[in-house]
Length: 119
Length: 99
Image (tube, rainbow over all chains, first blue to last red; front, side, top):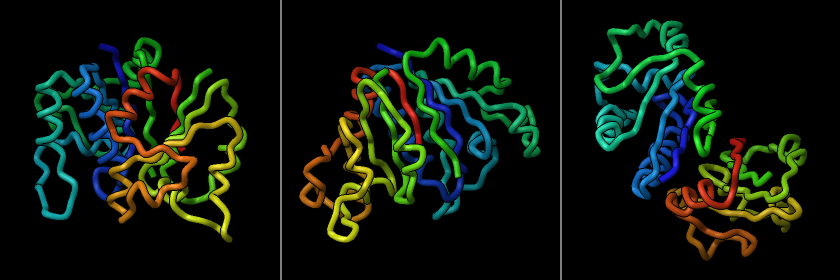
């Protein structure tokens, strides 16, 4: 088993790359790899609790919790979150916030890194 | 360096793309990037597929989402699944880039 870290930057709503990120993570975990998500930029908003699930909008809270239960680590860029009015108390259970140092450390330690761009 | 480059858009990215050099280069076409694998421009293949020495892949899910099958794909390009991409990234290439 190896470790794959995904730096995820796409927006919660209206981005194809978000779906790609999840499907790649699921495929990697199905093969026994450890997967980490670093949510940064507009992607931090996918890890804010209390979001309403509209029919035609991305809603990934349930999907993220399933992956967390299987061992995926999800960490949110705290500066990106605070800049968007998303505070510590808004973080869903099982996820955490950290400074960019967390991601920098992962880029060194992880076996593979894929930085998935935003818009 | 063994580098896997993800191309996620049809728009021209040649400036960056053409500068990329690697001992081993894989180009993985995803999202709207898959159009490079199925479309012709003036009867010619997409310039993306002219990258010397590169190996080309296209994600099957993203082809099917856009109404294409493996039969529509340029013979230079291998159709792959998400699981195949995991294997490429973890076993065949050391570094990745997203364009």
